[in-house]
Length: 304
Ligand SMILES: NC(=O)C1=CN([C@@H]2O[C@H](COP(=O)(O)OP(=O)(O)OC[C@H]3O[C@@H](n4cnc5c(N)ncnc54)[C@H](OP(=O)(O)O)[C@@H]3O)[C@@H](O)[C@H]2O)C=CC1
Ligand SMILES: Nc1nc(=O)c2c([nH]1)NC[C@@H]1CN(c3ccc(C(=O)N[C@@H](CCC(=O)O)C(=O)O)cc3)C=[N+]21
Ligand SMILES: [Mg+2]
Image 1 (spheres, protein in one colour):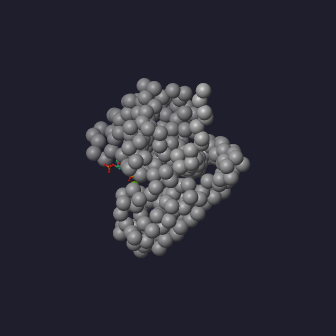
Image 2 (cartoon, rainbow, N blue to C red):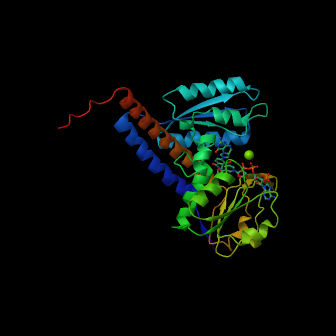
Image 3 (cartoon, rainbow, N blue to C red):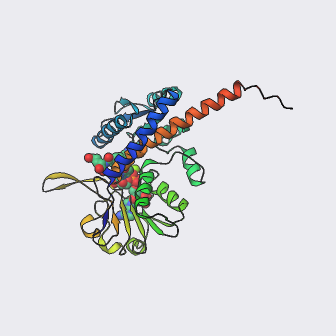
């Protein structure tokens, strides 16, 4: 029997920590961190995520602002919304829910977000910072996966990690974080040959593919840790249900530790979004303070 890494419970712990620090920021600086979520169109999955984000923000004492735009919104209109949020000193985090309707240029919108408010960590400056090991806002899903891995491994050094998937929102930043934690990292994708054999060598498998129950027991080395990022809606006996990218029933007996779906990486992603909003609010506070000093220097103490 594998150890279950309970994302519901762990995310509640993270949220309590965030809530405590949010209260401190309020008490000491009179600042309430605020997160703006921009949702274009009415994709049902996105509606669920946005609803969960609003609920968790409330629990953490974070103010949430929602912008819901019509599915046929044009680039200029969306840019104007982002621009207004960029300039608003009371907004600390901006998240544009992806995917966007196809008339919109995702890369352009992401690049238009003020990097200081980029709580998704998708802006090119955030991506570059992560890749080069500079402090930055880290994408929420991979950050949540790292917190889950730390429950199992004190030290990830020298572990062989296989990441299945290379998207900008999960696979690539996940591989970057694992590399930074001194893992030996293999990223596999739809062009990779013999994925099963590569996975079988892994101490850690992170599946972010979007294929229901793709990863089977014979892909997994006995004692490996398995992190299942996949969220796939499937029909079982005419009823809708969520399954991961890992065949949980067959893999669970082989693995040392495994994350469930639902109740695994999903709730951790949202908790990390709140964590990032707090981080962004603090950094913005510090940056305002340092600008005040520049424009209004303290008199230099007399020497001698
Ligand atoms: N829990 C959470 O918080 C989140 C969950 N998700 C879920 O995670 C999953 C992945 O999301 P995302 O990264 O956005 O997905 P994308 O569709 O953007 O990327 C999927 C990746 O998997 C690769 N791939 C697809 N099929 C195969 C295959 N048969 N074998 C090997 N590799 C394959 C693709 O390869 P190639 O690049 O060659 O096309 C691609 O790199 C989805 O189920 C999504 O719903 C996503 C974000 C957050
Ligand atoms: N700009 C942007 N940032 C994202 O982080 C982002 C995004 N766009 N687009 C979509 C994906 C997906 N994603 C999830 C978040 C929470 C759950 C989640 O809470 N899942 C629950 C179940 C939810 C349900 O019941 O459907 C769980 O796994 O237990 C899932 C998926 C964030 N994403
Ligand atoms: Mg995608």
